[in-house]
Length: 154
Image (cartoon, rainbow, N blue to C red; front, top):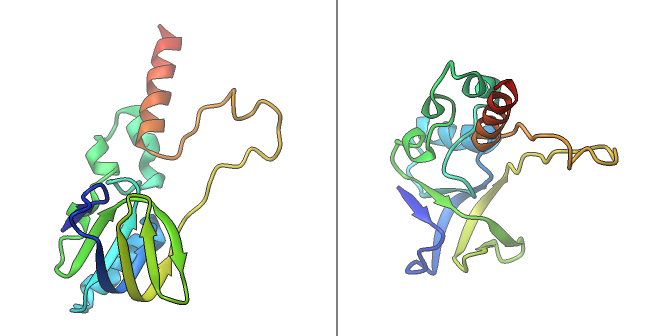
């Protein structure tokens, strides 16, 4: 099941395990729990609807693979029972109360918390690097770089 965090009809839910971040760490934690048939409710929270398989991201850039092959939707990957994918951004974590608050206002309580938040690009303090380079971290970046290269080659 997928929940869009803009749907405020759900004010608060409880998950045995809440997984924040859906890169390799978060997704593989969720899949491990799925494949071992843990029946208690779990939630996977991430801001984007697609997993980015970065080792093959260049294949999207080159046009050798379709975007759905390299960037599958979490809803398709988590087709295994009692796990809910929640599209949203965590704004606040209260470790004492074991609660998460999303930027949309939705709240979740949990018993176990997994943080798999990933990384951000670093420009190592190099002046002008951010403004004069193209990122290559997700599908949108790959498509933007592909379009940029095509324009330059024409």
